[in-house]
Length: 393
Image (tube, rainbow, N blue to C red; front, side):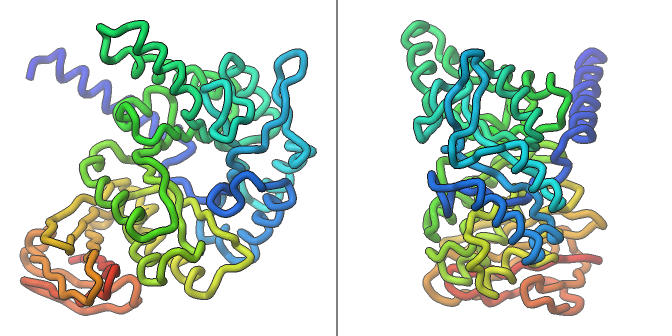
């Protein structure tokens, strides 16, 4: 390696370190989003009630601090082009003040196109105005959804048939425009890209000011969809780290479409993947099982580990897989995962996980120390289930 290349690598490393230190997301963001449960029916009353529930249930103290309003809050622009909320949100500044009074943060939603996914007002041509409006209201996070901007991308492809990257460059420029606008407000607003993994945002997200970016199309409240998303994430580990996170979409825990064991697998995989943890359920109807999954402090600690390393697959054989994630303190988190409809015994070699002389093993979900283990570890995992371990010397 020549001197110039070495200097470039050192400069990039220094810039990445600085971005992580100044980012509003040194660890994966945690909170709640309105879409999975309320969709287009969310109101000011719902958001206030959710803020109250985050406090009373203990979720805020477990780390869930963002209260994010998704699509359908937008009203019309006035003669000056300034966006106003619709009748469902009579005073956005007062709402932000209320959320902040609870020790929480308020997120909002828009997109780079003329319209949002639900055909409400987008930010195209009004990026600087909207960013200033959000900052004035006291907004702490912006989710920026591609949707109708795909029309501009299609037109760009047609106009430049000899440039296969024309649409990609246009999309990156659009996301950078809002990123620059947010930064210009002087308010630390977490920037969340929602473009479904199109054009590999993990490669350019930090350059446009983003702290997180969607890596897949939408999740839904089924085990199959959740599992497919999780299995697609292993190759993206190099792109995650303090200040910048891969986002496989929101949590479905508590929405009723999966069994408890499947939700436990869901939570485990998202924690292993260093994913943002954004609950999407009705917090007034959580069961004890829901609470035990969403607020398990040891699982959350894995997700929030300051080392910021995303898990990778150690191996996969048929319907079983083993995932490992480095943690601070020379520890390793290990997830034994099965897609089987029956109980499975899953084995892995402790030496392959970095412990040739054996390790102290803790079963996280069982909250039980399993003692010092050597050689091959075998765990029994129920259908669509998971065993989550922490290995330490």
